[in-house]
Amino acid sequence: MASLQDIAQQYVALVLAVGPHDPDYVDAYYGPPAWKAAFEAQPRTLTELGLEVDQILRRLGSLDHSLPAGAEREALMSGWRKTFLIKQLGALRTHLAGLQGLRLPFDEESVALYDAAAPARAEGEFQVVVDVLDRALPGAGTVLDRYVAFRSQFIVPPERLSRTFEAAIGACRERTVRALPLPASEAFTLEFVTGKSWSGYNWYQGQFRSLIQVNTDLPVHIDRALDLAAHEGYPGHHVHNVLLEQHLVGERGWMEFTVYPLFSPQSLVAEGIANCAADMAFPAPERLAFERDVLFPLAGLDPSTATRYATVSALVEKLSHAGTEAARRLLDGRLDDEGAVQWLEEYALHSRPRAEQRVRFIRQYRSYVINYTRGRELVEGWLARTSGEDRARRWANLGDLMSSPRLASSLQ
Ligand SMILES: [Zn+2]
Image 1 (cartoon, rainbow, N blue to C red):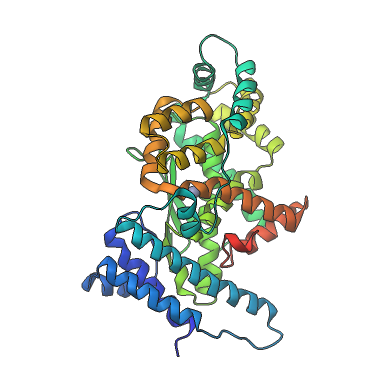
Image 2: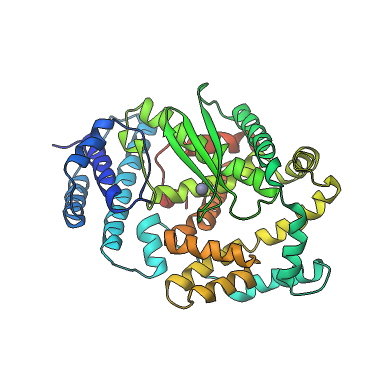
């Protein structure tokens, strides 16, 4: 009879086998090289892979994973592990159907792939915030023109990007390692790249190392330094991957965590954690002080403007769900590409180039976009319920979440 451990290994092989069919699918793999070589020697069709997923899901369903009494934590971990494999494989099944041309409605797709749906939102909710910004931003022209002009004062000059980002990453790291023990050898490499649909990316490479890339196609604003340092690095994606490798792969030998399929429920928890990361490392007042006193001078910006920028940015942050809504309408065929660009200009206050980049991102990653907004809501809600205002407890719970195989439905 198969064990969870056997099924985990079959799951890794299946995920790797989808790689040649979709270059975006396998986001990371640091398991045995021989497993990768095995499927490369014997490529399988999408139909064959689908049948295999069905078979493994049946085997998983009939699996008894009862544990000795008294092992409460172990029972919980084992239960989460089984649910993790069932949901990850279910998402793989949906993704295979997608690669064969199946297009589901936005919400159905996000439930099947990410184990959650983002509640629909109407224009009015965003219009209220845009109206406040309209009154707050001086000058002539549309509110978008004025916001773009205002924001242009906060662009980090290209020659200062590296030192500004290094400082932001260093500070986020310092605050994270003070709260969460990390392996001494963890490290990352930072690179600036162009020609991408995303603004930043963490490529986990195993052995506690990441490659963090920052896209400079569009001007990089000063708030991105701390956002990306926390989201991609500390305590975001890099730390999450390090803890999964340390505790689940290293200590338990759970090989399913050596592979990361991008279009899967794992991503909702990953992006949700990453989007809470800046607030974890830097609660708002501390963030403002650090940006004003350290990052603004490093970027050659006027520190006396930092408070005003933080106030406007906090308002614009309230428009983040407008991006998810644009994706829903675009993918459900209620907006075309140009319509979605205009929606993002109007309700997310994206400049035209940024709105166009965003539409390219939505076309490439589809309902993945809910992971940022819905994921953040779920992780934030769970942290608030389990930790209250106690910051030490919040860090401990975040560390526990990043070291266990949990998905969205276990956070609700
Ligand atoms: Zn991310």
